[in-house]
Image 1 (cartoon, helix red, strand yellow):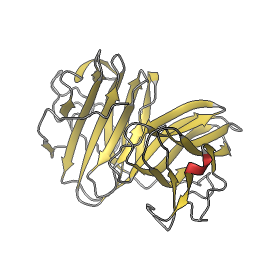
Image 2 (cartoon, one colour):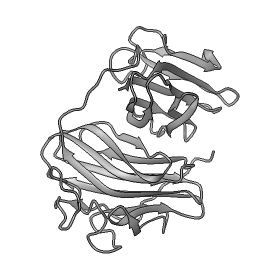
Image 3 (tube, helix red, strand yellow):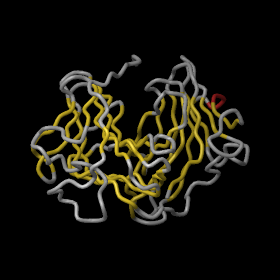
Image 4 (cartoon, helix red, strand yellow):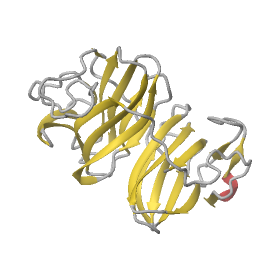
Length: 309
């Protein structure tokens, strides 16, 4: 896969007005300006559109009026973002209602520049509106950048509506994964597959603690690690993991349920740890496979502090 470049086409704007008149959201205070994309017709008020020309825009057809769309008939990258300044420090959650064709290299809701590592939530394929959430955003510098990112072949699309950033209590739950930080010094009960000698545990680059797990693929051999668990109840589950890589577009984290993939996202190749979130549904007794996979290419990928709850 060709390493592609991204160029923003608009200057950053600083957003200090949080509640938009006429917004449909009636819960706790929403710090997002024009979160329903209806404030000024199809003009992208409060948001900045970056990426390939014409690849992100507003159009009718949202849950409530307009919607944000990322689309092009040819390969494109689109980045729609908002910088929110002068917000109180504390714990927040970011949510949005989304649709997606699927088939992108990456389709993500992102959070960064809040005082912690960048967070990436995959936007799953769905022809119906579904709500995705990034919880536990600990703002420590009185600002945050929220964004929607697409790296996509032509003909694929996402839609976004009703974006909400609100103060919340921290969300936690029992971690269903064993050895989530690899602090035993070994993979077990994680398992390596494909070319198993190219995966293991090391002390070179942990996110926290002493150890991380690594993948070291090459141009002839791919490699993965995974862990299997049984869903204890019928409900929504959340996978969180900190991952880093120098590989462009050819390393992913994902989830299978009963042998069918239900979500994945590629790992950004800046070499720094970022947090990745995938939400999915599973029924009681279902077999959940959490996996980290690198294709046949030279490079490295690491993973640490993996949670499934």
